[in-house]
Amino acid sequence: MSVDMNKTISQASLDNLHDIIVPDAVGFFPLAPGWIIVGVLAITLLLHFVFKLYKQYQSTLYKREALRGLESYAKESRDEILALLALAKRVGIAAYGRTQIAKLSGESWWDFMEEHSKVKVGKELRAELSNLLYDSSKQYESSQYTTLKKLVTLWIRSHKVTSHD
Image (cartoon, rainbow, N blue to C red; front, side, top):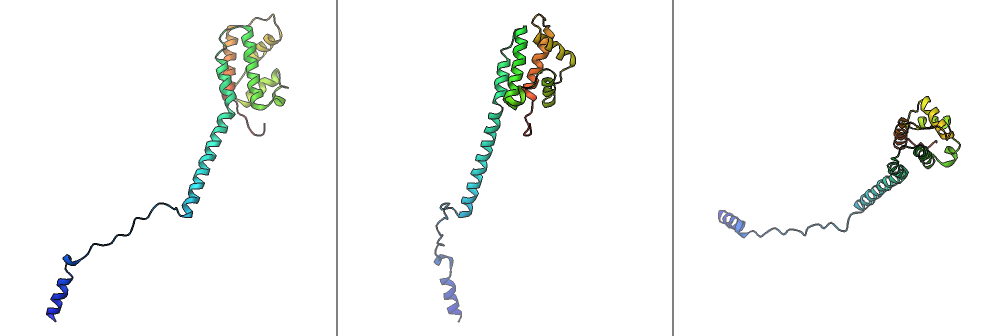
């Protein structure tokens, strides 16, 4: 029995072993249905967020155009003050619609601006601008122009359009 055992051990030695046959690597394609669903969902979410960002960018286009236009107001004159007031009103129309903004004037317009932005217009400035707007013989002051330009800039940058407006 010991001879048979030696013979068996010698047959089982490492020299007599053959290499392991490795199966072919598993390919990536075709994908399992679960991965296809995950991929479609990921692409859909990505497109959704890109579309949302684009809509947000488009919805503030009027603000960027108004700020660019504001840079062209450099002369301190009565006409420039009236143009600044008109620009503020055009921004309001673009943001809130003609039907809501066109009916506002004087105190109601200033109240609207204060309610929908960070703009705070004092009673004195309101009266001065109203006089300047309706009385062509009234002279403007340099401080009025500077203050109004800052207010219009703040109005353009800070007004918020809510869904219930």
